[in-house]
Image (cartoon, rainbow, N blue to C red; front, side):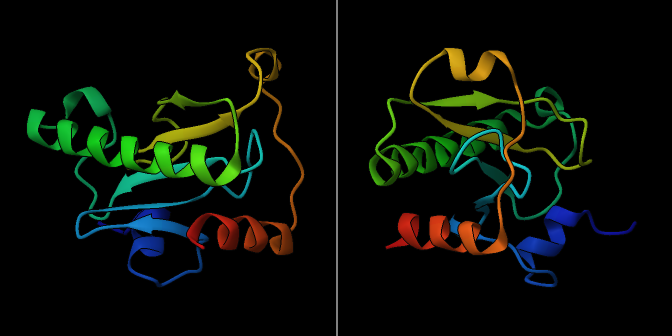
Length: 129
């Protein structure tokens, strides 16, 4: 089976704006973000594509990793909240979206923002510093 784009990022085969990782999970900036600092948290290996069908232990560990990244984003990006979105359609690899937010109204429109590679790098540096 061919690797997903997320596995390729985790394996460093293609570039990604990685902001956090441990032995099993990795977090990187979404290149088509809904907000400044929109981040994806994934298992480094593809354990499935539907979050509610992965093993309970894997689900729990994914949520613990997601919480760690959310706290990091909130601290480094000075936002009011971190929104969580799990949809699972775009890439066949379970993943959690973390979306920094200042107000609830921001998410009602659900529009992607334009962002350059340079801006992604600046966000990455701000989070990992």
